[in-house]
Length: 224
Ligand SMILES: [Zn+2]
Image 1 (cartoon, rainbow, N blue to C red):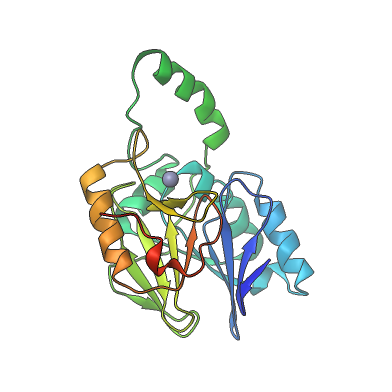
Image 2 (spheres, rainbow, N blue to C red):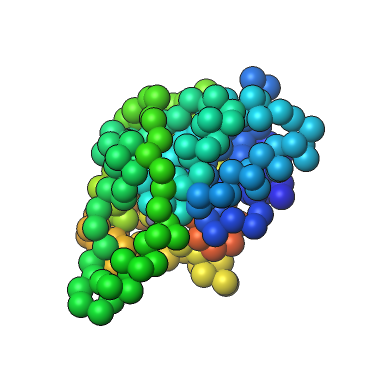
């Protein structure tokens, strides 16, 4: 589904997977769960393009629902892969970059569920640093937004005034943005700082990992 020209969200995945179109090829932001590679490749084919047209895969962080299809997509497309150094280390080891804050029975339950969120280790070709601009959509800026995980990044495209926030925020059904919090958040105070950094960018559209696309986003950031 096209959000704005050259920016698409691929439907049918647990996490929102975003596909960006440039003259020199395609860029994917996050990959979905293991097995979601088929949905991504189908979507690329429906655009009349080839797997090899996918040139870059950027990971916001190392959670399995975001990197689960990475190994398969890299093998199918030959795309270059990009992540923050802390998240890259975790992705290459095949586990998340932080433990969930769970104990007792809940911990057992999470351990059972974790099988669905398992990601195969995958190579990261390029490490990203805060403020760096990638040659995507006329300049896609890497914004360090740690809190949900210790090396989480968001991506901001000033040309389209669109922010890809990963899991640093979620969006509820009403399209209100929420700060990452609870058991899956590595550092709640840093997560609030990450929201402040992103609110200051002035993005019109915010694309989160979980929840609807948020339009007219300026007044929909959490109060922090
Ligand atoms: Zn996450």
